[in-house]
Amino acid sequence: MKLAKLSLAAMVVAGLASSSFAADTLADAFKNGKVNGELKAWYFDQSKDPAYTNANMINLGIELGYVTDSFYGFTFGATFQGSGNPATAETSAKTVFVNDQYAGGAQLSEAYLAYTLGKTTVKAGRQYIATPLVNGSGSRIFKEAFEGVVLVNTDLPQTTLIAGFVDKFQGRTSAIGSTTTGDAPKFRNSAAFTGGTQTGLTATFDEAYTVGVINKSITNLTLTAQYAIVTDVADADDVDVYYTEANYVLPVAGFKLGFDANFRGSKTGSALDALNMEGHYTAARISLSELAGFGASFAYGVTSKSDSVIAGMGNGPTSYTSTMIRGTSSRMGADTDSYLFQASYDFGKLGVTGLTALAQYGWTDQGNTAGNVDFKNVAGGLTYAIPAVKGLTTSLQYETQEKDANGVKTDTDELWFKAGYKF
Image (tube, rainbow, N blue to C red):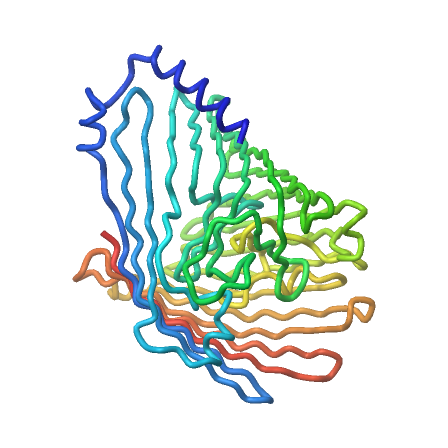
């Protein structure tokens, strides 16, 4: 954590020289701080055929955050997460959801000190991070978090610069990086790496460094690039991941057209050659939005012939052809063509404020050189932000996936119900 110590020392000196602050005293900074949170009630159900199995899990959770007022540019923030399974889960459910929802207990997922000087903010400590390559997923009861330092600067016109350092990761359950199961996740030097295989990759690491840039200098065009290196993965060698993207929005009378392109990839050191994860993923997407409440898109992605792709650190990195529940890992295998059609509708246009719907149909075509494992996915979801109770949102998501491994078919059906009250 040498980088963190040096950064904090520089911040202290700059802070003492600054005359811009919001709170008059440190006590006022804490007294004027803000509390936010969410109460959660979630239900997950999964079934598989032909060897029929069914498992379900209920979680009641809480997320409680606090951020102080600014004092000489400094702020302190903390976020607590907790979850419990109110009914005793069956053994099959504990096995099925061991990496997802089977987690009881609490964790201090955020505990950071941030400093802002001009258009530069540095945040050091435990924190949520959401960038294309380093991204903690929030789709399970415990939101993933990292421990490290993140710097964001916006001095250049229409440009955001990002730099970061990470040395620990908090996953979804205690099973991440450990043989312990059923408890709240811990911060460890072991992380989930999205992509690479159908189930992703979990491995130890030493440190991770990343730099990125987002530029919006050209009207309606957003350009993004990011690079990250994760050192000593699996106690063996380094992993490099890179990401580039272009997003263009064309306003048309009554709606908008979107044109997106993405090129990303991963490279491993020689000690990790056996993983065959030195591939790249190229994708394009065209979309239509804001057409009387309707939206639609079609995306296509293709990976390199002989190697699969690591999409990034954490379970948050996604792709144009990711599906609602099953995610992106099956789209990152070697020699894979993947497709996704998506349609959405905002029922507010019919007077039902807060109700939205989303439907997806996706499929993959993998060549024989990579095993010839194909997927078909159909998914649908409804989300309702209840107007009568501000902050209360419910959602229902369902996805069915057919896996065809050289003629042997397996069906997986999964249903998620989520109710959350934010305050």
